[in-house]
Image 1 (tube, rainbow, N blue to C red):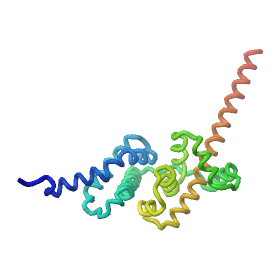
Image 2 (image 1 turned 120 degrees about the vertical axis):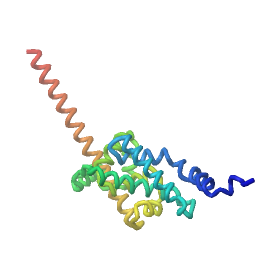
Image 3 (image 1 turned 45 degrees about the vertical axis):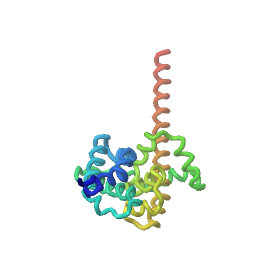
Image 4 (image 1 turned 90 degrees about the vertical axis):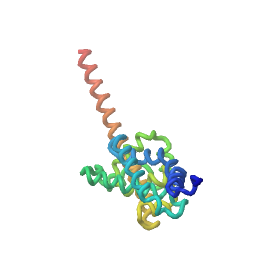
Length: 205
């Protein structure tokens, strides 16, 4: 009899299921933060898994499986955006950095972590979608998904120094986007309150 382990395709499938499939939920979460809808994110992850399976035999180092599949997913997301002609709406960078300086006051990035810790995931998601993709991805991969600098460099195909720079600036832009959104919300609340007062005064007359 021929044992199952002598079938290369079965061995490859078992290795794929052990190294790639466990990252499915995190990959989907990453894709959702980078997509216009959950359906688009699911399509992107599915395509990434297809590409990963087709090229899995070329993965020689099991320890690199996680950054490898993330790199594939980023490529798929980029292809999808180009194919559909969608581009993220970019907020003017200088304005975001000015808002960051207002929030942080030139202090250490520890304050950034404190600010983010007080926000729900939807607020972070909205803010991330307002900053350029390169910076958003670097911040997500490091601060949300927990990748190390070297792994991020491998995923996005840039030097470690560039990764560190993107994370630092991405945090500033993210904080600025959060401040910009908070300012808009505060303005809307003030406007609503003013309109309410005017209505009540009119009714009293």
